[in-house]
Image (cartoon, rainbow, N blue to C red; front, side, top):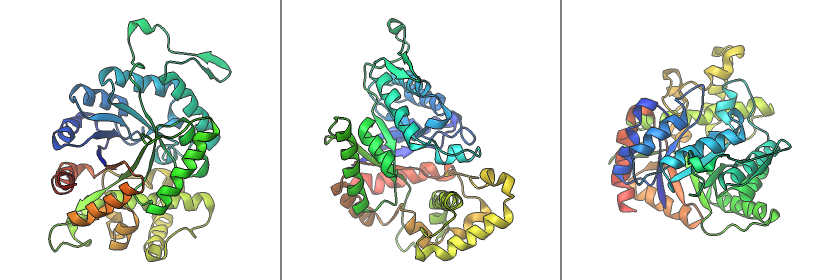
Length: 355
């Protein structure tokens, strides 16, 4: 099992990446959301020149906010600074697009986007909107495509999973994906690979973006410390559910054990967030801090269904071993900014060191 740290993209806090390396994390993930954080590639460049072993990549880059050739160029530029330890996490843009009042990229367009990015990163000439394109003047060595940049695709639906199998080197999932679904999704990606004449080998990278909190002796899920360390990620589940509910017009997917929290949250959104600004306000604090007005929604049941690794060290390790046996290769943790250093340190010392 590999362990990654995802750092809310704050360009003047690049020191978090050497800190992750010092703690023994394998990967540093840099989120991409233009209306919320600093630029992911500028931040990653600083991380690259101040680390030597930590693998670095986007978590995840947003297809809808950059042309495919631009994304390929940006990550190939980082690969020049961190050759052989750069990866590209890429997705359709749930939050980054919706916070601008836009929808995420559609599956068919996303699949073609991946085709273009993969070809360019392999140093190939590709068809782009009916025209052949390739990176020019390679003798200047402005970018690096000689060292492979693995592409990890954020995928959940059947079309995105097929695209991940066809053009990806790995897949990024959510932390609340149960063991059985993880195995099922691997089968879907293998089929997607076979459809284009590929075969997924044992090196296909499966990861989840999630959160963690190592409980202290006698501590439970209602403690202020637990809520401080998990709340920003947990409430982002509610943000996501509301977007899905608004899109579908149906909330039948909400689990019964958190139905009361969901109803209270939905009422809060629809009575306290003006509709013409709702797409902005809804994502306030996204994974970085817990808005005070939303603290009441962080219940033990919500923490459990949001899928983080919250428990005593042995409990977390047991769960990780089961997921690894089911095909999971990495977890990437995203703690709130204010407690990130402490959270990363606790997990490294109490879980990673014993794994």
